[in-house]
Amino acid sequence: MHGPEGDEKVAQMMRLRAHMKRIKHKIVVLSGKGGVGKSTVSVNLAVGLVQRGYKVGLLDTDIHGPNVAHMLGLDHEVMTIRETEIEPFEARPNLFVVSLALSGRPVDTAYIWRGPIKIALINQLLADTLWPELDYLIVDSPPGTGDEPLTVSQLLNSSPSRGTVIVTTPQSVSVLDARRTIDFSKQLKMPILGLVENMSGYLSPEGTILPLFGEGGGKAAAEELGVPFLGAVAMDPRAVKFSEQGKALLEAETGLKESFGHIIDGIVKAMEKGD
Image 1 (tube, rainbow, N blue to C red):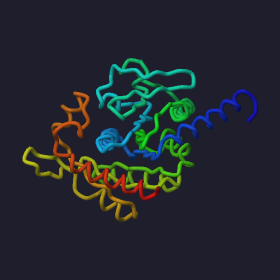
Image 2: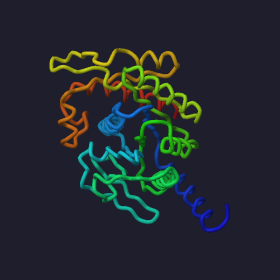
Image 3: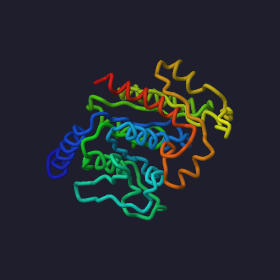
Image 4: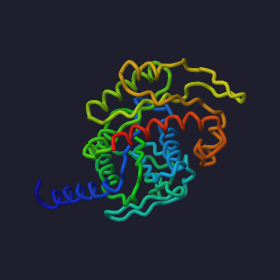
């Protein structure tokens, strides 16, 4: 393509490659359906990695429902946006966040956009964000295998250290959708770091887990499809209170630190094995 539009696309791709070189590992968090706690997993993966001493970016590409900022208590914060520069907001020391929810619009704004506009926006978020040198970039995607996760996966395709984490719940319908997301990753040649079974049960005050939605669906699907099972995370009734306070689960006293720790162990091992 020639002319100003073609020149800008070439320039944007060059910016993308330059900025991605500053990031060692890229992880795209996917789910086949909504309501499985994908953003919760994304936020806690990012926070958990920071707690281990890594420098982490968290990119929210859920255009229609950007919840990452709210989960970190950033509802009234604004990131700096220029024509070809986006400065991520430092939510915590060594945790840098980019989300439409930080664009300065009211938090209840609806983004009524078709595919081409969303694709152009994600291109801009990836190409024009001035990330610092990062150990990890966590990309929170909307559910399904549509424009947003497809665009992100294609843009990261040339990155040497990348992978997907797939989130499901134990119910059969969620596991079925997770299987489709696994197929999506394979078709796009995105390495699958593993599957997380969220809401695997109810964590009682006594510390026992009650399987409200069945047991073992995610683990069985992972074994059948030959992908790693990273672990299961139960529902802690205190999570809602912490979320409303803008705290990640790993920033509060819950019984889930061990579960997330095991998941993060698996991700770090998989990513560093590929170095």
